Structure formats: structure tokens, C-alpha cells
Length: 573
Image (cartoon, rainbow, N blue to C red; front, side, top):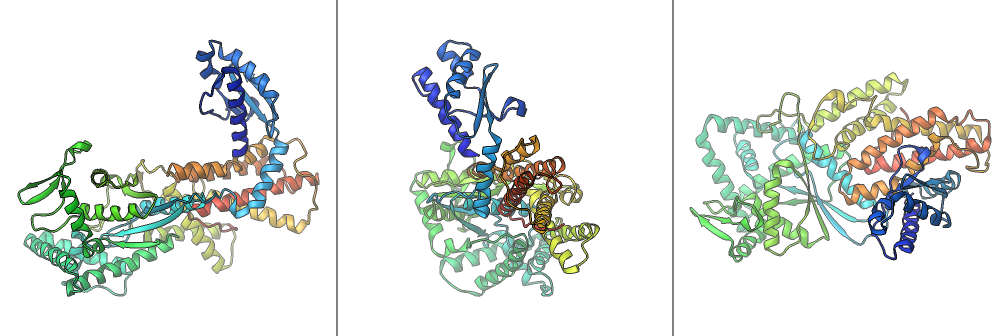
């Protein structure tokens, strides 16, 4: 519980100041490897040894005597051991206070106060030239989980999908739609993806057709700059909107919804891209090479120059991206981008350009790719696993698992399987730190036995079943947490009360995998508690009631935590 840690730090700081006569900065607390050594420990005596010219052991013993004089909430004992100071919790009062708080706050347990800060978080932003694949899924799942966590701890968060409707890929789609008939009976994004693949094959067979792609791009940008709703603009808008219809459906199936879809072309239409080029020209950092304007960013340690316009005068994605970020950063306190690792150089160039223009810069989370066992994926060649396929296969396997567990009603089977499938996909991706690559394997993503989300969902279902049986038994009230508690229930209580702190760390560090791994830890600690601490079979009514409160608190923490990861609890498995 964060209040206990803060009280400990305050008391240690106070006593250190009495000994040293000055503040020594932040006090670090750790959890000893064994409960026999206490619940919290500090190595402050080792830091003070140089200042006081005394051995850490002597300093620790002196501080220990002083700290014992303090009435630190929930602390029953303080011991000095080999230079460390160890603190022991009074678990009965700690449990009464902590578990009561979880039960009282319920779905708001862990929620932070309004911070008065606006965040704009851009994620997914896949080109609308086909269906989302599992690589896009990593972006979307990291972004959506982070949005949920940041909102819960007190930020005002707006999510953006930045629609790249002006790149070569979309020009290829428009080119393809003029030559191939789209299959309207297929999901829109899949149908557009097939057009894109066919068009690329045609361009490979006849490279001279590449000139047509250039013409389409020039005509589209010229129409936008002139404010025209010409046929080429209508064709681009139709193609993009049609693909986005399918993309939105996939995201919805993943429990993901963006607040705003920001079209790249709007920055061209409003003249903001040309304004950016003009402002950058005025910095004196732009050079002309072979009719192409380039921005020299060597002052920022970037040797490669940023191309602002092509030889034909058309703008590039990076220039339009700068315009988008200038607009975005003017509307928020904190900007966040979720980008693939291959965008690092472009992101650095955009950041440097924003600094030249005296703008705030976004925080960027780079994630490594998800690849297939046989190699990397390619949208152009049609070699990838779509998110739709992943969800369908996950649900098929989940249905088999649910049937094995004796659920008979078909509608109930489908609903439980849908929630398990969603959890399996989202959790398997978000639990891995973004900087680590993932090789996508069905047997790992859809493992229902070991370290996947079903383990957490099953712990929740077990909580529901225990509480349901308890209601049938009509257990009367008794005195809570007034007995010698077993280690497994102490460990679980302490783990549950870490939830607010875990959310704070995950949100402020922009690392949702911290919450994901904590949730699995909660499930394992609950299973250990369940296996070692009798609940409904216990004879002492006060112990039964106390342990039921622990079960109910576990249920709340799992529900709150999984919701912040965009995952639902079936309640029955």
C-alpha cells in the first residue's frame, strides 16, 4: 500500500536528518527475498557510511532504535540486520485497512486524481491499403492499453489514428481500382488488400506503369492544394473510407476505438504543409540539391538530410508529418506516438524539425516487429497473418477449451470463448516489452494452460464461484483479520495492494507490459492462497469471512486490471 511506503520514507528521512543534520535525498525501499527478513528494507545506512565515517552496521542499529520510537502506521517491528533496516508489517491491521479500501472503492480502486493534463496519443495508423496484420496489432494493443491506463490514473487522453491517404501505397490502390473489380462480398479492408496486391503484381510486370502512379499522386495533391473536390479526390476518399470501414471493424473486435481519425491530406488542403516548408526555409537550414529542397539536421547529430519536396514539387510524408505534429502538440500538454522500430530515423528527423520550429516534441514508444517463423511479413506480396485470422483462430480454439470444461449452452459457449480469445490475443502481445521482438506462434499465443490470459481469467472465475457458494451458505458477519494469518494470504494481500502503484509506474513509464505481468502475478498468488488457505471448508466463521473478503478483493483487482488491458472477464470457464 503506497501510504505505508510513504509513511516509512517520511519516518526514515526524519531520523536520518536528526543524525546527519541534513536531507540525503530519496529513500529507496526494497522487498526482502524472504518474509522472515521483513516486508520492506532500506540500505540507507550504506549511503550514510561515507558521510558519518561509521560502519553501516552501527548506523543501522542507531536508526533502528530511533525508528522504533515512531508510531509508523501498520508497522509492528523494525530490525537492523547486517547494515540493512528491515520493517515488519502488522498484517492484521494492514489487511483490515487495505482490504476495506479495495472493497469500498471497487471499480475505482487504483484510480488517480485529475491531473489537469491533456494527452494526445497516436497509435495504429496503418496504411489503408489492406487488412491489419498482427504487426499492426502490436501497435494498436500497446496504444489502447496505454490510453486506458493513463485515463485511469488521471490524464485526459485523446487517441488519434493518423490516416496516410497521400502515400504511394494509396495511389497504387486507386490505380488498381481503375483496372480491377473489387469484390463487394468480402470484408472491405480485405477486398482493398486484394486490389493492392494485384496492382503491385501488374506494376512489377510492366515497370513503365510506375509513371501513372506518379501522375495520380501529383494530380491528387494539386487538387487538394487548390481546394477542389475533383474526381481524383473522390476516388482517394472512397478507397480510404472503404478500407477504414473494415479496419474499424477489426479494431472494434479487439475492443479498440479511436477518438479521432486525422487525415494527412487535410494538412495539404489547409495549406499547413506549405506553411511548414516556408518556416523551415526561413531557418537557413534548407539546401537545394538537383531541384530538391532538403533540410540539414547535422546540428542535431543527424547526417542524412530530410527531403522536404520531390523534384516534381510534391511533398513527402515526413513534411506532412511535421505539419500534423505542430498541430497536435499545440493542442495538448503531452503527445505520444507508437511507432515501429523502422521509423526511428524519421521520428528523429521530425523531432529535430519541430525543435527548429520551437515546438514541443512527442514522446515516442518504439516497438519491435512481430514476425512469422518462416520470416518477415509483406503486405505488398500478401504474405502476412491478419488480425482477423488471429481472432477467428483464437475463438475456434477457445470454443474447444470451453466445451472440455463442461459448459453446455451454445450461446454461453460462444460468449465465454469470445472473451477468452480476445484476452489470449491482447494479453500475449501486451505482456512483452515493446523493445523485444516477437515471433508469432499459434501454440504460444493461444496457450490456455501456462502464462496466458486464460490463467488470469480462470482465477477470476474461481473467485466468482467461491463468492456464489458463500452467498448460498449465508455466512454471518464476524471479526475481520483477527487471527494468525498464513504466509500465502499475507503475500496475496500485499500483492493486491500494490495495484495503484503498479498503475502509476506503468502509466508514467509508458510501459503497459508492467501491468500485464503484474496481473499474472496476482493470479499465481491467488492460486497459491486458494491451494493453501481453506476458505469455505474453514470452521472458524471469522476466518471464513476474512478470506472471503480477500477473494472479493482479488476479483475486483483482476477485473480492474484486465479492463485496463482491454480484456473482459467471462466470470465462468
